[in-house]
Image (cartoon, rainbow, N blue to C red; front, side):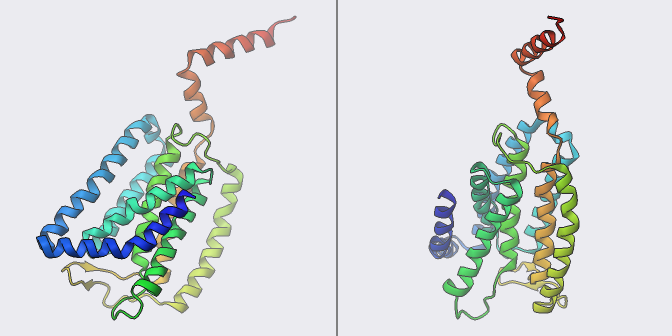
Length: 273
């Protein structure tokens, strides 16, 4: 229900927020606004990531945790450099990190939570294209924004599922099943990419466009967006493949009562009587 309310807010408040942003541009000038809004949006996000990363502690040493975090960092920087026209678009990251966290806390698996939040982002962009900006010259279905939404959702999923105290009941899939799925996913993705390539071929010349804001950016095609989504999905899945026993062992080592209880149980089992 909370995720539904967030989606409705995204759909119906988009035009209001966009108009408010235009007012600030007129009042303060684009360059000042574009610089200040980056600090306003990015600072809380970076602070939140750092705080959660500190709480992860030793888990950051695990490749299944540190690898996805480093990959998401690189994707975020790359997306900001080449997929964003103005810094206000940074809002996509926290905008879809929140529903992803809601889905995860509601009991969905990490991959299911990421997919659900990303799908909400797709609905948002389709609604903008067909309703809000219908008939406006120069507009198009924005796959760039969909990728930004997916990255934001992935940040929430990777951090929260790695931090077991936030989502202690996260459902993890069996390792053996997760090992079989890449082949199925790769085959399905290959077929989907072939169809997407036929439907919406990438525009590689010119690769970059210069926006009205002065920034150079690339307009993603459908197959390019699918490749981005596939890479992001990998970062979401990897922490789920971490051994289950690690956290249980750490919890028992830090809980004297649990250690004592295990000792008593062992003694009872070894007793001849």
